[in-house]
Amino acid sequence: MKQKVKVISAIIVSAIVLMACNSVITFPPVSQTPTNNHNQGQFVWHDLATYDPLSAKDFYADVFGWEFETLGAGENVYYVIKNDGVAIGGLFKLADEYGKAAEWIGSMSVPDVDAALQYNQAAGGKTIFKKAAFKGRGETALVQDPQGAFVAFLNSESGDPQPKRAGNISMNAWLWNELWTNDLEGSIEFYKGLTGAESQEVEAAKVPYYLFNNDGNTFSGAIGNPVEGARSAWMPYIKVKDVNTTVEKAKAAGAHVMMEPTPSIRKGTVAVLMDPTGAQFTIQQWILR
Image (cartoon, rainbow, N blue to C red; front, side, top):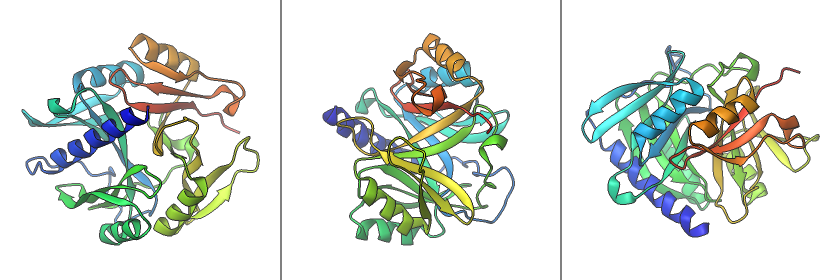
């Protein structure tokens, strides 16, 4: 397991570098309308790097109804993911030489990419891909945090989308981002320092669980890594209307179910899936309280 994770990590890094070198594409902004506001610590974009983009597109279209807009041509193709006509992420192909692998990479908003890189480096993290300008998107860089999780730092050209409460997020859109970490205390202190957030322990949780709150908004959470032997990683969540129905659709479309809905875990509202190309994500049925 550990060796597989190392190989996937190297592949994703190489793919991000290849995509960033593409100066032909104008990437979509992270917000439908310009806000000129940067919400430090908010995840504002998600990219899927995969060896088989066509299979991935078919899967996410079948399960979530996502649509895809093609930018570029030939080896320089980037697929914009749209949910109900709104751009929510991207998808691109890994070079064949890197084999069969896939992973979701989240982009976290920062007001100053250089300052974020310096902070990460000083804390023991690694800069995987130095700051670069993506036309239409803004400045971005890829890092591995001190606990081993990959995350992209992004300062968007036009500002970040307005934060939404879970109940106002569209179905089949990104609901949440959760850090599965092998050093919970270290990760909490790192991201508090990076984003200026306050951490809040969820008292009702069965295992230690923390929220990151910033300026009245809760942008993400952190939990001790539930997967033995796996590196720390950010897990993206997709909001669904019915978790059991979505699991069955995902199975029929070729997904591997890593965790079925279980009553003892968040009242059976979540499931962890792996798409047919190997990328992991979580789905959650949001229940209003």
